[in-house]
Structure formats: C-alpha cells, structure tokens
Length: 139
Length: 151
Image (tube, rainbow over the protein chains, first blue to last red):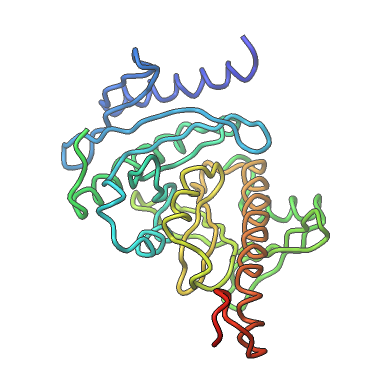
C-alpha cells in the first residue's frame, strides 16, 4: 500500500472511530462507491454528511465533507450566503450540482482527530440550521 | 497546538519564506506574502470563539469591493471546488478566507493556508480589476459603454 493510500486509510479509520465515539451511523464506501455518515445533533436528530476524496493543486489528497441544504433555484440572494460564510468556522456554503451545500475540506496529510470531528459536527449542524431556515432537502 | 503558538508558527514561516509580518491598526497579525510574479498580497489573521467554545483561527485575504464584477452564484460554485479556503463577503469586501481549530493547527497547515489564500486573492483581484478596468476608464473618458452603445 502506498504512503498516500495509507494516510487516507488512517483518516477513514479516524472517521469510523468518531462514529463509534459519538453514536453516528457510518455507511463508509457503500455499493455506489459513495461514503456518508449520519451525524447525531444536539437536538437528537440525525444529519447526513457525505465524504469523498480529491487532490489539491499540489497533488495532496484532500477529504471533502458536505451536506446538501436546499436546491439552488430556491435561493434568491446569493450574496447573503457569501456574507454568512464569513461567520462560519470550519465550513462554508457552496453550490455543488445545483444544490446549496455546507462543505468543509481537510488536507489528509495534516488531519487531526479533534479537527476532523469538529469539521464533521460543524457541517452537520450548520446544514441542519440552514435547512430549517430555507425549507430543507429530503435525501 | 503541536509544539507552538499560531504567532510562533507565523514568525517561523515568515522568516523562512521571507514574508513580511506585522500588526494592523486593530492589532491583528498581517502577513505580506511574496508571490511568484514578485508582487505581494496581504493575509490577515485573527482569532474567534467557535460554537463549542474552542478557538478558531481565521485567515483572510481581500479580493476587492462587492460589485457587479463578481457573480455571487458563480463564486459559490467555485467554493465547491476549492480545497483551501472559501470565498465570502466581509463587510463590503469580497475575501477569500479559511479557519483552523487552534488546538489542532500545525506549521505546515498554517503555511499552506496563508500561501493559498494570498495566491487565490491576488489572482481574483487582478481578474476583477481587469473586468472593471475598461468600463471605468471608458466612463472616465466619456467613451461608449462596454455594450457599444453611446452613453
């Protein structure tokens, strides 16, 4: 196994351990080749967070976490989302495949247990908050 | 933290890469990052509390004022592709920003973040200025509007 694959495996194990620790349901790499986890929020509800890998401009592997919030065509004021971005920690609003999502990225090389946990929790919680505000998405 | 503070990391990075570090009028750390074309672009660093009571270190670099030269929907699509940082509106300015959990920050990550933000912001700043430029000059000279119609 290459050093790179090994580091990806380490981060995925980290995510699995977080699932056990926080009572999240993991569905890492299902039949469709897609990974997602259901994150338990403070109010007891669950929010699905999707994961996938890609490379940055330097060729370094990056793990991406995101949760869909609302279809793009329901948003009238995109500047407002960009304003809200300045208030978010560890995540941001983006548009992916015609959906507004809350998304975070993590450089695999520097991934840290507490940082990965904070990013997943943040993506899930912010996703839920804004889903309520904008009407939400059914998955 | 992994063996240092954000300030100590920034001091080491700036010394090694020959970037200028200082404080702005609000007391926030500012880093002037040297770019490949010989220019420099500024990154500001500040701290704030996150929702779990941890400290989030915020890095941002200014692109320019919020105006018609950037389409916000397109900017949000770009946010989906970015691996380091994201576009945001801070006050009345477009910025590119990133945050890190202070307790988990390490020197490589801080250096990569500052470098990427400065480069993104500089590239976008130039692109934005190029879009705005001919129109402004045209208006100043009393020439035709960009659509070719007389003013």
